[in-house]
Image 1 (cartoon, helix red, strand yellow):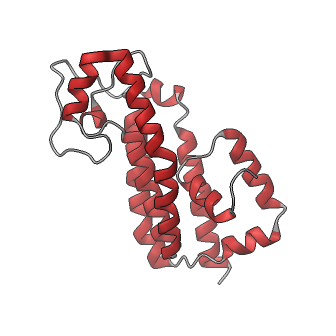
Image 2 (tube, rainbow, N blue to C red):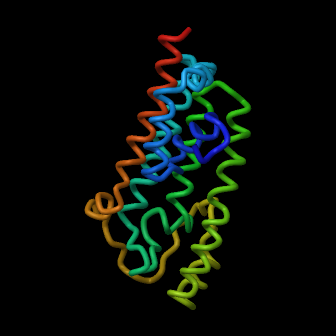
Length: 199
């Protein structure tokens, strides 16, 4: 495995931060590692924490789905839909999903691990992507970046003076954003199994 602990892997899975190869490695490793399964079983998920965390994770999942339908990678600067509020709605959606997962798990230390993992993975990526977009779109991106925050969303919608395209389902499918839903279902399945079958 490429990460240091099952706890980190579980958080990364919930964050949709693993690529296809890592997901396959994780599930294979988990299936043949009883001690790893015991670690996962240590989560203190309850009906209450699940009920509290589930809607939060759903908001994050919907945020990612909404964002994917407005993103045309490197072909056009995305400034519509959720991109009118934050420059990185996909990562914001991942953060919200992970927040819901950590609340549902009932473990405070998982929240600390989650924040550390998120900052370690996504902040450098956001900076690199900002530099790339600046090179591609120049002054247009500079104006957009000056008005729209990197991560924490603004309340009012940014308007670039152009018609706002509707959500494009084809983009959602092209970017295989449904994998985020599958990853979230897997992570939640672990918590539900623990809450109701491993008491």
